[in-house]
Length: 90
Ligand code: SF4
Image (cartoon, rainbow, N blue to C red; front, side, top):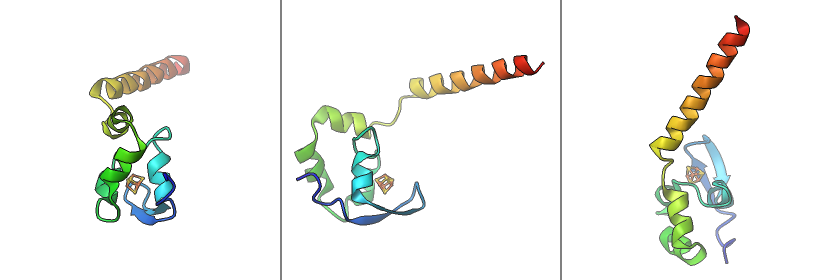
């Protein structure tokens, strides 16, 4: 069952604190964190767990870093927002 490891605790380098496995497997729009393999490979059979509970598409979606294009888009939006703010403050 998917809740099998939910109560296991790990130190999360991103949050800087201890968190349960449940958080790691759900934080990415209900899919696993991108780092789940690195963080959990020495604690549980994480590859097996992912294979048993998620489709290949879900795993790919969850583990692939955001594309540069997406990041570029976000940066562009921030840049635009800043310009609008500057104009309104003039
Ligand atoms: S898998 Fe993600 S949320 Fe979980 S401990 Fe690692 S970095 Fe933190």
